[in-house]
Each structure stands twice: as structure tokens, then as C-alpha cells.
Image (cartoon, rainbow, N blue to C red; front, side):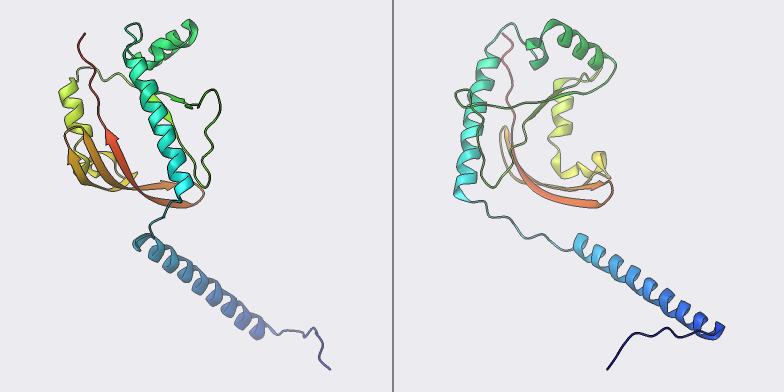
Length: 200
């Protein structure tokens, strides 16, 4: 029959036990560091989206494109903030003049109903910023130079690479780094389209 017993420890035994505990803690720390380094260095496994997820996203994009086209035809609203109520519009313009980026979460609805995306999340945001002294050509040269984004947006952007480019359409691979309580490395592929509004 076996049981638990308390044994008095000599100072030598206590010192040895302390060394064992210190060694175990040190080994555990090294193991965690090794696993973290391996997880960051290794390539992630691509996610295969299910057909219902892709169908919902495609529906959302189609409705959003149609909504954007309608908004661009509105001669009274040059920026999205122009469609805001007076107080919010004034506040947004004041923020942009201070150099702030004005951002808002948006949602495209289908006949007034939210679009359910099974197995996925749709993030839809819009933003505006004033860049004093910069021309449109200068701005596009910077933002479309995806192969060199890490020179501008590091350390938050670890890698960016153009996979395909055709006129105003880009397909770009990004790797982002975010650190809060934990470190998160996010790999993503973006389809990016640029549309210029006619001068009239």
C-alpha cells in the first residue's frame, strides 16, 4: 500500500530541490521560446473556404459594389463623410484637418437584412484622411508599391508581395504582426481594386 508522506528536508536537500526547480523552469522557458520561434518561422496551412462561406462573401461584395457605384454617382457626396448628418460631418472634417484618420464600420444589407456568412466573418470598413501637399499620383505610387511596403509599414507589416497585377487590380500576399497580450502573425491574400472618379 502506497501513500503520501512528508519528509523533513535538510538545507542541502532544499538547495538541490531549488536547483531542480530552477532547471525545470529554465527548460520550460526555453521550450516555449523554441515553440514560439518555430510557429512564427513555419508557413501556415492555407484555409479552404466552404462553398456557403464563399457564396455569402460573393453576395456581399456584389451588393457592396452596386452600393458604391450608386454613391459615386451622387454629385452631392464627394467623400463618404459627406453623407453623414451635419454634426458628424463637421466633426469628421475637423478630425481630418487635425491629421486624424476617420474610420467607420459599415454593413451592406440584403433587402434590409444582414447577410449571414456561415463559417466566416466579413469585415467592412471605410476611412478617409487628408494628406497635405501630396498629389493623387504620388499617393498611388506609394500605396501600389506593395513589394516595398515593409520599408514604410514595418514593424506591423512583415512581408508583402504582388502575386498578380492587371491595370487597377492587384492580388497581394501580406504577412502582418500584432502584439498585445500575445503575438499574432496573420497571413492573408487581398484582391485590391482601384477606381478613379471622373473629374465631372
